[in-house]
Image (cartoon, rainbow, N blue to C red):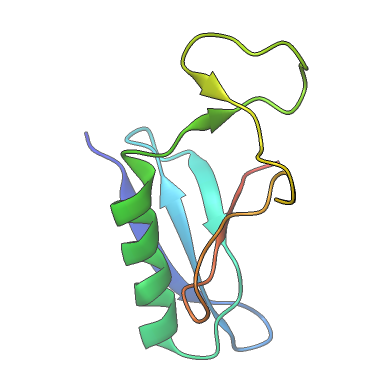
Length: 92
């Protein structure tokens, strides 16, 4: 069964989304958005950026084939997205 995105309202009334694997496990959650439309844009951003996204291993300083390291001046672990697109955080 394929994974799915779910949009919901949190306790503060903000819109959020989560990505669930085919087995129902939550594998990622989005930030809080003021509107449902903004949450939908966050999902679309993930869909359009994830396929070609590089894997950056911040736990090891030795580069491995197929992995990249952050460029100078870029904050490690922060996605590069334009205003209003929001971001997504992996499940802790």
